[in-house]
Image (cartoon, rainbow, N blue to C red):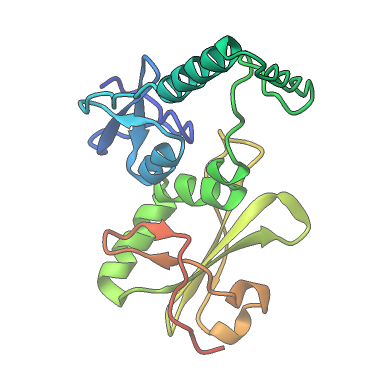
Length: 214
């Protein structure tokens, strides 16, 4: 794989040595990072190497029986004429040229994008190392006050905490440290809303963590 290969879902550059999953969208092959496998499956992409499922023809048998029944009724003397077919609703009928729009939940949220960038940054590697030494921390991911385009990530242990910022509007700007301290009471209330966690491999995940002392 080229060093410039990117994930087809989140657009993040695939790092050297990072596990990559292959998917097929229609006839196009896609490379997907470890964090976006579930999202690719929700989009209906097929894992590479799996045979394309057969699509049985549906409705032909029923339509054939209906045509035969109408034909017999037409041949019977005195049989009433079949009712006219209902007119198609021009508003409700979907166009065969339109592709269905994927649900909004399939698109990565700003918090998900921020966590993905954080995990691939130097700050993410720092948290992974501290986790091996200090144990699993409490994690909060939220909007930075006064900066609508930034996401603030707070990682805290009993005797220390760190805060980093991720600029969603500038993909080239590196993850930057905002502050650090020793007491949880130094954190504002929003930063102590523990809505994320650190997995076994040291990666941040938007999953609820155990309640921390406030």
